[in-house]
Length: 319
Ligand code: GLN
Image (tube, rainbow, N blue to C red; front, side):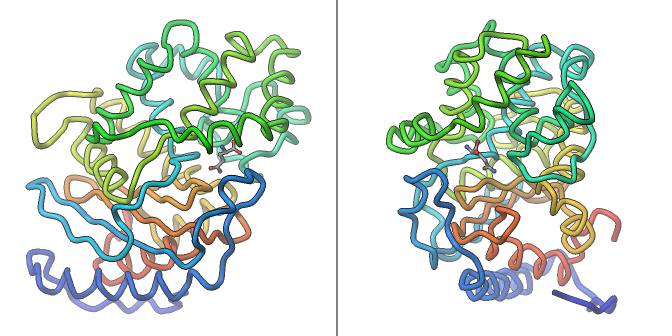
């Protein structure tokens, strides 16, 4: 952790310097993988290699800097919550989406059920399981898996994204906590679709196979206001991107979002598969992969690398 407020002067046009800093960030991230452990509550995830680490940074011209495991595919897990939210905003709109889910950080673990029963009928935000299941219940009424898959491919500028069948079956077979969330929402009359259909789509979205580059692409699309910078195709309206970035910033790392916001300060989203997507407005998409997670379920190496980069390249949104 950096305790200093001193940041060196930096020329963001100096590509050699940037390469050097990202290489250092990679080393830093790789070292920190030893402080975490892979998720095992979804048995298939326990097969990941805890010391794997990779980082991919891409700019609007398509130049990319990749270090380590950036091609290996892994399940997107909670990063799919960003795609679900994007689909809901695009197809249902802001007002309808946020009539059924709030936009407050929960301060609880990603799979917590506590606030749902004690504090509010509506889930706190779309970046935690309860909120993403709620969003998926809305989408399930008019989108099927194939629709969501093609939207995900467009959103990540990656046509090779496929379902990881093993992870999907593992999620489905062990997803009782998510079932409890869906049925609690149904019991309150809040869930907007059939619970089993909703859960099936939710599990499938968590089980899409991405790599660090797909995540860098997703970050880049968000950084570019929702337009694919290479084809010029508009995927989602810039106004919705503002909402997505805000929620990534305030809620993207669950109950570590506040600390991450101070120490890294880049709108980001993590997943228990080990990925983190980060989006530097008008500049870069960043994807990291490191399946060794800290106690909050966020990639230990990814956080270390992003903190390093953010500090030295002054990427904090409030810098
Ligand atoms: N599929 C996971 C779950 O629902 C996603 C959680 C995560 O990535 N934090 O528990």
